[in-house]
Length: 65
Image (cartoon, rainbow, N blue to C red; front, side, top):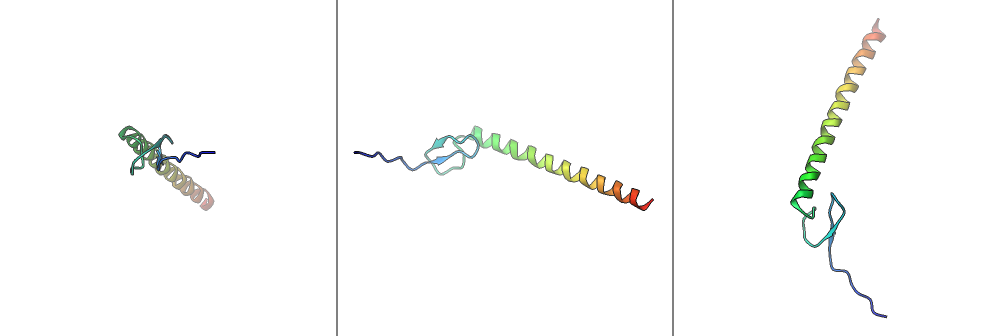
C-alpha cells in the first residue's frame, strides 16, 4: 500500500484555499479583502463603544433625577 505525501502548504486566512508559500494569504486580492474586513470590524466596534458610552451617560443622568 503506497501512501502519497502532501507537499508543505498553508491555508489562506481569508478564503481557506491551500497554497504553497510563506505568506498568510494566497493572493494580494485576499489580503486586500481581509484588510477591508478588519477595517469594517474596527468601525463597528468603535460604534458599539460610542453607543454604550451614550447609554451609560443617559442612565447616570436618569438615576440622578
